[in-house]
Length: 176
Image (tube, rainbow, N blue to C red; front, top):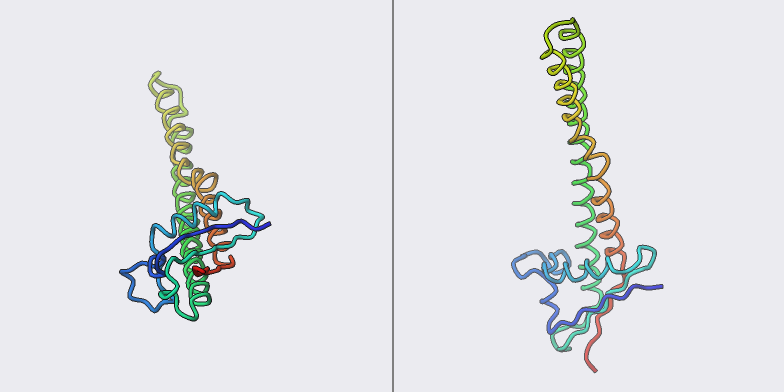
């Protein structure tokens, strides 16, 4: 089954960012067009192939090779977005490793201080300090746990969506 995404434009230039000076096939998509395409792609089941159909109101502005140029441009744009998202994922994993190392070292230091230095019997405040160090040590583990449990999968999900969008069929329909 194919998930259909339809876009109605007066001119093909509406699809692209007018501020981007790159050649046509390397230009960024217009932010509104990208949001529209991505939001509709999210509505379709992940197992379905996607197809973008662009309805042009003015055939004279399309050019003879509009079909291939638009398909190449859309594929190039979403491939680039997938690559940027992959880089973000790798950066997050590096940050997670650093946070994990710092968190484990801090937790270890808190545990050593709590059990070695404050383990001798003494005033009641030592128990309070010992428990406080244990809690603070585990709180330091919050950031790496957040990264490794929750932050990575939305990024990979977005990358997979961009890869699907890069592979989607693109059709430009001219008025009859």
